[in-house]
Image (cartoon, rainbow, N blue to C red):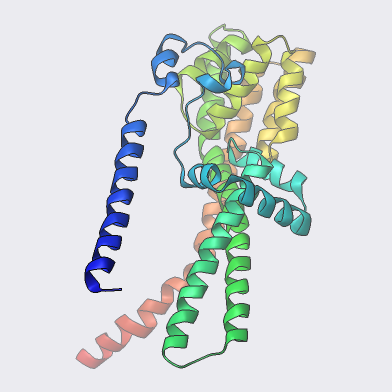
Amino acid sequence: MSTLVWGGVLGGIAGVGLLLVALRASVLRRPQLSDRVLPYLRDLPVRDQGPALRPMSSSPTSAAAGIFGPVLHSAAHVVERVLGGSASVRRRLQRAGLARTVQDFRIEQVVWGLVGFAGAAALSLVRALGGFGSIGSAVVFCVLGFVCGVFLRDNRLSTQVKQRERQILTEFPTVAELLALSVAAGESPVSALDRVVRRSHGALSEDLAHVLAQIRTGEPVGSAFESLARATGLPIVARFATGITVAMERGTPLADVLHAQAADVREAGRRLLIETAARKEIAMMAPVVFFVLPVSISTI
């Protein structure tokens, strides 16, 4: 084939690609049904909305699942059978505050694994063009890239859980003090909880908002806080929920209990800060010994 024919074929392919991009962009610019309806249904709980009223996700994972859905689902089932531990993953997703199912997380692991596979394949191709490596080593390297991507997503989930738990520990004294002040001012525990949830924003406020939603649906206050104590991975939050339940059942002054728990968390945070500073003391001496001290001696 001549150069003119090749140019025509490539130009036609490029034109079709640009046309598809333009058609897709015009579809994406149309307002979704959720954008038109949800402003009039702001008080509707999210769990009671139908699929047509929920905002569509625009994350890369959801886009990949929409395009390569069957293949990704099959790969996610394989990863689930190999790794297992769906109960642990479900608990960590709940503790991280992520609105995802175990299947969605497995799809994300597959996507991360494919990214690692692509990076390893690109590096193997560069080595092959340079005359290094063999086909067997390249295949093993690509498989290792896929496995590393899968485990990196699992490690990222554990990191997200730790970050959220640190955020909860940071917010806990303030939220407990606000609850104690509201209860001491004469409000009931449910009214105080509603006030704190409306006035504060954060990880702990989201958990308390779930507790408040359960109470409003008819669940007893003690049962709602007991479910929070079972779901959380932090002992201090579990003691907080248990303390509120016991105080309401036995008539213990709730404000005193909340003040005491807030003081305990602040004291624990102070001890942790002192311990961290003691561990970092030697690391802080390294720049002084190897950088500052030689310069000072040389100038003298």
